[in-house]
Length: 77
Image (cartoon, rainbow, N blue to C red; front, side, top):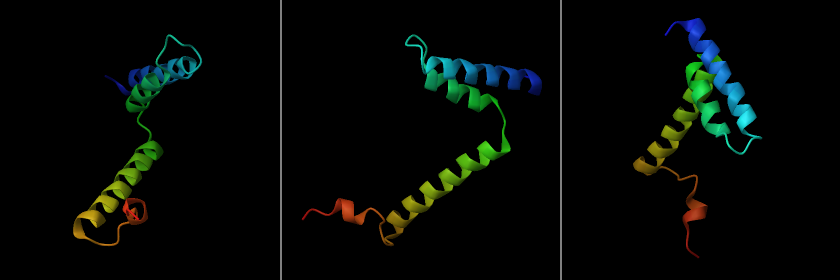
């Protein structure tokens, strides 16, 4: 698919998703996620990449045995 067609389809899905947040017969979140997947946005891609890196760092800490940030929640007193 060419970029302009992809962007138009993406923004249309985002608009449909926003309408779906208020209309009970449309799945708003689903359309928003699909639309964001079609629209290539550098800031959005960087945001998702940063979140993925943070999750991987926390999982790596747990595997290596470093301090667990959720240790207080896991304790049974």
